Length: 356
Image (cartoon, rainbow, N blue to C red; front, top):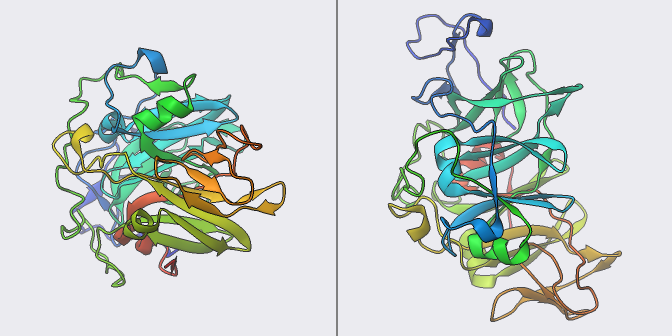
């Protein structure tokens, strides 16, 4: 990934200021890191999340998008209608402290392990942007972190890399069906926000420019082209959402691993209509290791939704779990990936190989 450009030139008028004096002198930055408008914590993170059971949720519609994180059977849904207004949830899943993060400007979601060197970090929204993406800060050391990379970029923890967990952007109906015992982030956040309204209507139009992005756009695609990006052993790959919507299943070899990338309709865009639930259908995607017990499986889509493998025949849901047949209950290993805009993925991964 390209090095972050930091300048201490004092006559640059744009500054990132932290009112807490423990941050030290206000940082004056230029190049790739820039102020995004709100001050630090102007977009408040959720630090004491509350949850509903699936059966108690009444505020989500079937096609409404949620971010799904599952760690060792602890499955949680984080509605995009809430994350749009908060961008970070500091949570603990299966006993592991995690930060679930979302940047509407890049249409990207990542979940990171919050532990480093025996300490648990708590993250907030810094107010800065890096290639138009969210920049976080941790409240323990006041270091700045790239949401898109999970890496410390300024401060005492610069260069530290957080471990990532796979996150799936899916519809509420898909999560509820696959995880009836799962938990769902509550709108009882302690903040008065207009949950359900999209403050960025029309932002995902392919021809519209990215907000506060000054870099060159890789000319292989338009800036707002939706892509599914992932990285394996230093090699970056991307599949366009249009290709996936047409084929539904794309098999590739990535870093010596047989992978399957698939798509299923039924999830709304959070950045299209005036309300999150009414966005056009952009579907659900997953990137999975195609092996079970060392056997490489080949997949095809089913007309009624879901997928089947040609070797054993069972049905698989969009999360990579066999729901019937001899492999019922078995799961494919998920590969961390991101549904995002091309300009952002190419900015952070300029050497990306485009599949198809």
